[in-house]
Length: 153
Image (cartoon, rainbow, N blue to C red; front, side, top):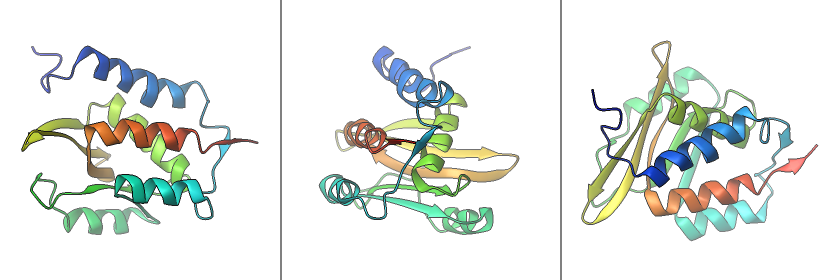
């Protein structure tokens, strides 16, 4: 049995655990407030890393978006994440679902034209919760910046 079929590096495995799972489990993100609608930093991040973070109000909307996306990495692929807005807050929902992506190993690493990509597809109870793709180098930078958008209650 191969416990690491995606061939993630030791650093990646440690980052998944520390930055995606522990940060949520320890409550470091759970007890925070986030308001990205008016935050200039979030808009700058979206421009700088050319990514989309699409939150869907219902699971049906999330499934409809999933049914209309191609998660195969190609020359026109872009950094995008779709998720169900389960926490009624886009970033809290992102951190919650990305924790589950890492915890359930619902992530693949693909190489396309010398660029590494993470492809996410997290389902629970036969319902899609989060999906998308992101260049690996940009993902960790954006994730770190999103964590820094938190405000203590």
